[in-house]
Structures are given as C-alpha cells and as structure tokens.
Image 1 (tube, rainbow, N blue to C red):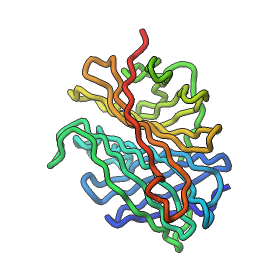
Image 2 (spheres, helix red, strand yellow):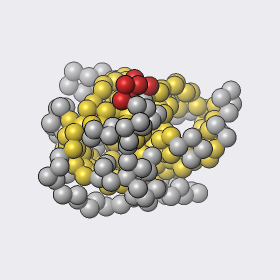
Image 3 (cartoon, rainbow, N blue to C red):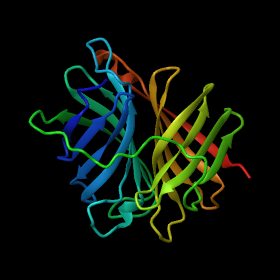
Amino acid sequence: MSLMLNGSWENSYGSTMTLEVDEDGFIFGEYGSHTGSTGTYLVIGYCRPSDPTNDAGQPLVLSIYWRSIGGEEPDDGSHWVSTYCGQLDSDGQMAVMNSLVTTTKYQTFVPGDYIDKLIFTKDSSSNEIKTKNIEPIAQEKAKFANPINGVWVNQEKSIQLTVFLQDKEYGVVNGWLAYEGELISMLGFTDTLDNNNILQSVSLSGYMLNTYQPISLIGRISQDANTLILSRWLANSTKAQSAYFQANSENWELTKKS
C-alpha cells in the first residue's frame, strides 16, 4: 500500500493537492488552485499501490475537473479538465505532465491542449483530510442523460470505451475500457455545466492490471457528438535518471456506436 502519496502536496505555482490512496491504488482528493481560476476541485486517479524505491518510481495518473466545489460562481474555465501523468520518486518529489484540455475561450486562453510539467513536494507537517469518497465501480446504465453516455470505438486499434454519467453535480463518469487485451475500470469527470459550448471535455483514469500501469484518457466530444478525440496517457515506472520515459502519450479518435 502507498503511504508516501497520502497527504498534502504543493507545486511551484503555490497550488495544493491533498490525496488519499487506498490499498488498491485508487486515489481521491481535493485540489486548491491559485492560478487562472481560483477554487477547490475534485481529484480522482490511480497509482501503482506500492511506495517508490531507488530503482523504480511510483507511477500515477490523476483526473481533475476545473469546476470548483467551493461555491464560487462558475466561469468559462469551469468547462475544462486535466490529466496528470507521471511518478513519485523515492526522494519525495512528484513530477507529472499536466495535459489541460480547454473547450472555451477564457482570459488569454483559446480552446486547445496545453501541456506543462509540474513538480510537487510534500508538506510534511500537514494532516491528512478525509474527503467524500467516490467508489470506482462502473455501473451498467447511466443515471443522467448526457452526450458522453454510450459505447465509443476505434476498430483499427481494437479499442472500445463504454462510459456513463453517474453524478451530474460533480460531473463524475465511469465505465470500462477494452484495450490491450484487458477490460479496465475507468473513472473521471466530464463537463456537465449548461452552456452554449459546442465541445464537451472529459478526463478518465484507470489502472492496467496486466502491465501494472496507471492509464488516463483526456479529450473532447466533437460538435456533432459522434466523435471523441482523446489523448491516451500511460505512466511508466522509471529510475530517476530515466524520468523522461515516465509519461507516454498517444492520440485516439473514437466513434460513437449506434
């Protein structure tokens, strides 16, 4: 079980993240941002359920929906999502690639993908907080109507993603990803705010038991709601001197199955 990941983390921008990790590597927490939009945001993810060693970092992925749960008035940035992909090293430094998908124009941002490397260090004096847990259990049917609901496929890559909206207030979606001969439980967020936005963002996280790799998907639904454009991220466990291999990305295009 991972003990080092539990607790509060801070990056160079002054944003903080408090994480709880269960024995299976499921991560749940809250993120406090002081850049761009300001607020408190939910975090869901997965890690390899063992602490890092000198020879192998602990790979992890996280999904974040930038709609504050702190009661702030939603702004256009509240339609966005992120995926973090990277690893925790044995020296206590967490390095992740932040893939941010923007679907609206907000401040100086235009719709697109923004990539940044973030370094987090742990606040050793912090106490763990207990947050509302969201069980990583995929349901067979959607609880709410939403364009994300259904089966998305890429026949050429033999990929099938089945997802459903389970919680409209927090934008929680879950389901299954058939990939690389494995059926992977996926959990994350999608934009559920009522708006005139022609695109809908989504970020999902899971864990590949066959390869012991956290996996995340991030992207947007097309205007006609029939195509899902995604980046697939895999977190690799590496030595510190090979950390440039810790995050692998691949582009996917899935079509909604009628």
